[in-house]
Amino acid sequence: MAFDLDATMRRASAALAKMDYLACESLCVEALAVTRQARQWAQYARVLLPLQEARRHRRMIAAEGTLRLGSASLAGAPADWLDDLAPGCIVLTRPHTAEEAHALVQVSRQRQLFVEVLWADSAVGDDTWQLRSFEGPKVHLACGAPPRDWRDRFVHSDPGGQSYAPHPVSPALRPADWFIDATEALGQAALANVRQPPDTVACLEALEECLHVFADHEIIHQRLGDLARNLARRVS
Image 1 (spheres, helix red, strand yellow):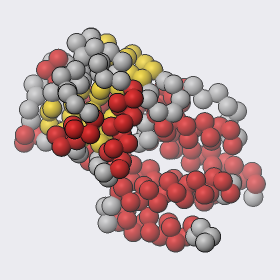
Image 2 (cartoon, rainbow, N blue to C red; image 1 turned 180 degrees about the vertical axis):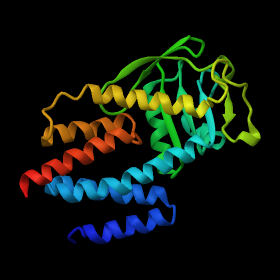
Image 3 (cartoon, rainbow, N blue to C red; image 1 turned 90 degrees about the vertical axis):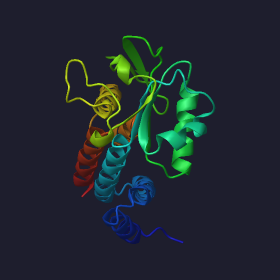
Image 4 (cartoon, one colour; image 1 turned 45 degrees about the horizontal axis):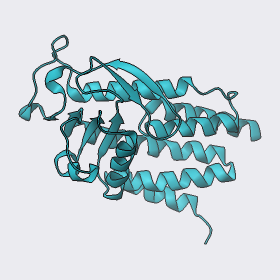
């Protein structure tokens, strides 16, 4: 059966309106692959808009849930942690590995959970954490570790149930803010490594690879949309 882009996008829009963000994302990812394969760049750019919106909400829901910044004291397999975590965000640290970060993402997706994952190739007590990608292109950066009171335990973003001490320098900063800032920095590092000529299909493919580093990165989606619209103008 031929793929019906208009019908798929109507379903995606309906899912977005119902706040079924994971269904919207899944439909958009399918449509994005089809439009890329067909080199339908105007339609590709159209698909990116609800995809970006669904992923923005997915990240917001995770960031308003449970946070875990460091995993040294976590035991068991990644799937065992989801009862305490979902929805939420987690930074895995040593002794946990990139493979375990990848496994946690996979099982979260299979269970349709709002969980965001980063991996720091560092001991939880280090003052500087080495963030590394565990999917897509190899990217890494050093960033200041979160306050010690926030590390290696479950904390909650809900102001009414705040379970962490204020940031020692910026009291308004939450653990979720640290996590989101770290994801933005890692995505920017991925973008900085894109070397393909601008406004080419090769550049678009490289930008798509950057989304594997962190799928919710706003600027990567925006860059993809701009590039697709430029490609559409060139072939019109």
